[in-house]
Each structure stands twice: as C-alpha cells, then as structure tokens.
Length: 211
Image 1 (cartoon, rainbow, N blue to C red):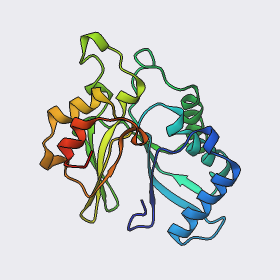
Image 2: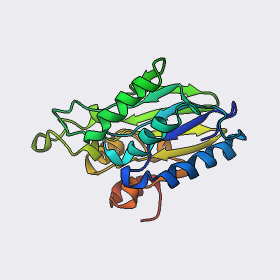
Image 3: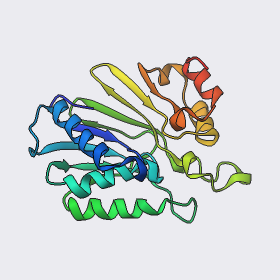
C-alpha cells in the first residue's frame, strides 16, 4: 500500500528462492516508482505485517532490509506468532527478527489480537483472527499447523476494504465463520487463502465469493 503521506504498508513476502538479486532490485525499483522517490532516496515503511511464522512469508523482506536498510526505514512491525513449543516456526524467522532489531533499533512492535484496530495514516487495520483463537480450540488438534495460526485482518483505506486470509486453513477459517457475519466480512478485494491452494469453501461462501 502507498498511503496518503507517501509511506508504505508491506505485507509478508516470498521465500528465499524467490528473493533473487534481480527480484529484490526489481522490487526496489517498483517501490521508488510507487513513491516517486529516486534510487538511493529513503522510503518510509510505516507498517510491515508478517502474517505467520513461515519462511515464505518473511524471507524476501529479510533480504530486502539486509541490503537496503539505508533506503527503507521500517517504523513499525506487526506480528503475533505463537510459542514455538506449540507450532514450529521456520528457522529463518528468527534470522528475520534479529535483522529487524539490528537494522531498526527504534522500530515499534505491534502484537495484534482479535478485535484490535489501529490506524496508520489513512489506513485502518482490523485484526479478526490470531493464533490465540485457534490453539487449543480442538482437543484432538491442540497444536494446529503454522498456517492455521495466520493473522486474518482487514485493511480499509479511502472506503476500500481488503480482506487478507494469509494461509488460512480449516481451524482459523472456522473461527472466522463463527465470530463474523457476511456483512462484517464484506470487502472490495480478497487475498485468497494459502496462495489460492486451500479450498476453504465454507469461508468463501460466507464471503459471498465464487468457489
């Protein structure tokens, strides 16, 4: 997202294999074009969101800040990861978090929970589901897979709402259906669950989208 103050919201990112030097350079060019800044000029990332503790959702950003922290100022980071004893984090997640601390010692951290709302510039972020809502819900599945600990959230800016399902599966999908109506989940855009892989038909039915 490019916000009205010309800062950015960045969500997740690709895995290590996707974070080639060419891909990172192309992405930096894209961000400079988006913000109207010159190469080498610093850009503000007012918020970075990592939806869950899998490498294919943080590796790209990890490499980006490793080599371009002089051009990218990350002001806030939002994530809510469960205890690693409950679900296994990808090994590279710890590397990414260490880089955030090293590159941005003054960064502000946000740990959203369901029902949490906060505003960044002209964007309102509303957290709908987090890992606290899924771990231990099913006695036979006390520790769900990491995908089912994804944060599910809305971002609304200038009257346009986008619903992010991250890698939502059955566990957190069931929580979403239980706690929210079709009206409250209505959005202009939808990020399909788990790269479009997960067939969470009941969730899509609740959203009024085509199967």
